[in-house]
Length: 188
Image (spheres, rainbow, N blue to C red):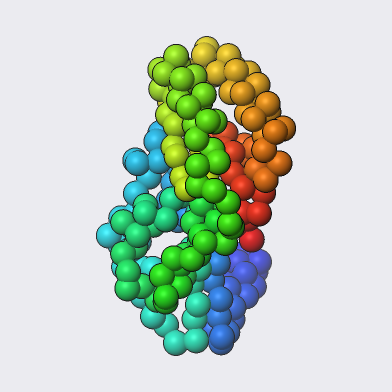
């Protein structure tokens, strides 16, 4: 038996028994495996039950942080829910009183960018645009590999120009996604 395994097990067991206990986790890539599209990465019934069970433990606070829209989190983990949720990279927070915004920007601020990226996505089969309250995400996981570079060069040109004249926003690269979001929105 590996003695490191015993030490590691003892460490995690002691941590899990600590009270109060806070558990902070991301959704995509952590609780949910990545999938070809955001719609295909959905929680199982077992995961939904695990979230309910963990958040019901005494002196335990469970927080699930996601870049997903708040409506998606409501669909996956409907209220009432003891767990706390952070949506759209920190732009929204859901607690016992419901959703509250963490940024104060005009929801129409990204409309022009959405239009440009929608036109671009239509030219590249497999590209998908996801609109959130104050952000736009261009997913390219399903774009054929021979077309990705061209798509990314064009998208970067559009996004860089737009962000340069909209200082309250920034571009964020992820797992085969390019997103423009408010600078003040942070998962942290």
